[in-house]
Image 1: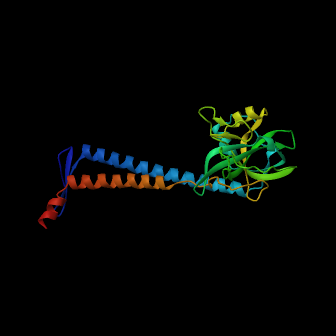
Image 2: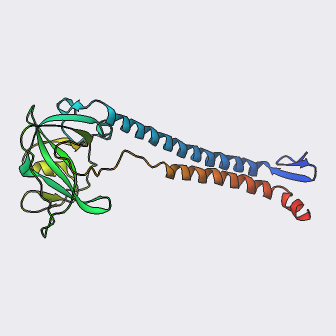
Image 3: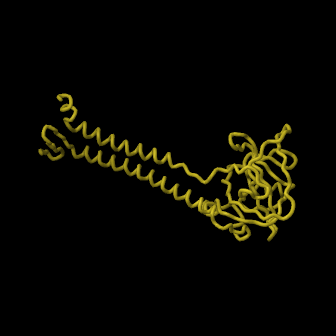
Length: 259
C-alpha cells in the first residue's frame, strides 16, 4: 500500500486500487444517501401495510352506536377523520325517502352509474346522517335518473363510516326535482338543500342491509408496489455508484482486457 496524503494505492496481486480520499468521501456520502432513501421507501410501505391491517380490523369490530360518536359537527381535522374512517357503526331510525341524492360518474365492474345517497333520521335526537346505499344503474329516461324504491318504517342499519375529502369549491347540483344529482358528494351543500343539519360523516351500508344496492366502494387496500419499486431503484443506484467508483479507481478493466 502506498499513499501521498490525499491519495492511497492498494495492491492485491496485479489489481491496483487508487483511493482519492476526497472523492471516496463523496462516494460514501452518496451511497449512504441512496441507501437511506431506499430504506425510507421500505418504511413507507410498512406503514401502509399497518394502516391496511388496522382498517380491516375495524370492519370486524362490534358496531358502535352512531349516537355516541363525536365530534358531531364539521369540518373535521385530518386526525379526527382518520380516527373515524371505516369505523363500524349502527343506527336506528328511518330513511327520509323524499330527499335522496345521486353522485354522478360512479363505476362498478366497468359500467357507469350513480352512487345513491339517502338521508337517515336517527331515532334518538332527530339528527340526520347521509347513508350511501351503493351503486345503481342509470334509469331509462333522458336524464338517466335511476328509480329509487322507498324504504318505509323504522330501520336498524349497520355499516362503515366514511369521511369525504374536503372539496376545493361547492359541488355542482343538477336537477329540479328529487333526487338531485351531485358531481361530488358535498355534505354541507346537501344540508342546505335539505334545510336540515347533517352529521359530518357518511355511513356506507354493510352487506345484506335493508336498502343496499351494489357495494362499489374500494376495498381497504393500499398500494405498496410503488414504494418497493422506488426502494429497489435507490438501492440499484447505490450499487451502480459503488461499481463505477471501483472501475474508475482501479485497473480492473485493463486486467480483463489483457486476459
